[in-house]
Image (cartoon, rainbow, N blue to C red; front, side, top):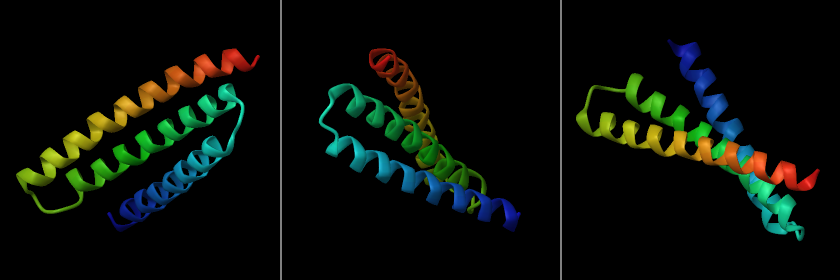
Length: 97
C-alpha cells in the first residue's frame, strides 16, 4: 500500500513538473502552431495529474462523502483535459507537418 502511494506521489510530481514546463514553453513561444502544441501537451499532463490526485483522494484516505465528491469532480476535469489535449495535439501536430 505504501509503495503504491509513493509511486502515485512521484507520478503526480512528475506530471506537475511537465505541466509547468509546457506552460512556460507555450507562453514563450511566438509561433502559434507550436504554442498550441505545447498547450495541448500541458493539458494532457494536467489531466493525468488531476486523475492521479483523484485516485489518491478516493482510495487512500478515510471514507468521507466530501472526498468522494471531490475525487469524482477531479476525475471528470482530468479526463476532459486529457481528451481536449489529445484532440488539440492532433490538430496542431498536423498544422506543423
